Image 1 (cartoon, rainbow, N blue to C red):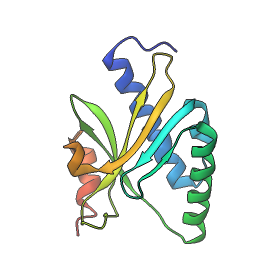
Image 2 (image 1 turned 120 degrees about the horizontal axis):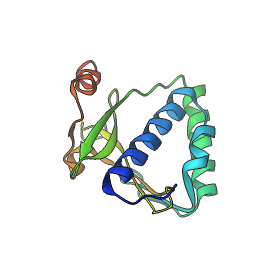
Image 3 (image 1 turned 90 degrees about the vertical axis):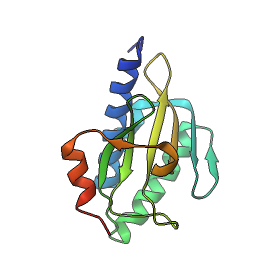
Image 4 (image 1 turned 135 degrees about the horizontal axis):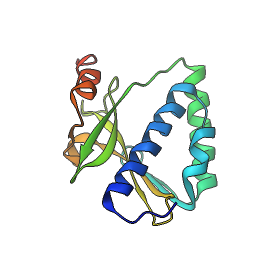
Length: 143
């Protein structure tokens, strides 16, 4: 798939983030694999951890999902938007150490592969609700 417009990037990114949500709720990384570029860059604000390959990220994700499943840990999500409409997948039932929401954003290349996955505080991204349905997903987990 060739990505030619911002709108096509937004659609692809949201599609991938929904698949990532599925991975976190079914404890399997299988649906994520086909979207990732071999030279994927993953970084997270919370552990200052960086990865620079699809294989490294998939190993990390598989281990994380296995640990979540063993601990009966569940995450719930809402699709938010930031910076001109780009999607941000926010975790709605967990907070970071500062009490804020956290979530994922992604970037893609022109061939339609995800080249970057970042996990950042929602406050850093200046996110807002995509629609009323997504707002309700957040409201149900207010502390």
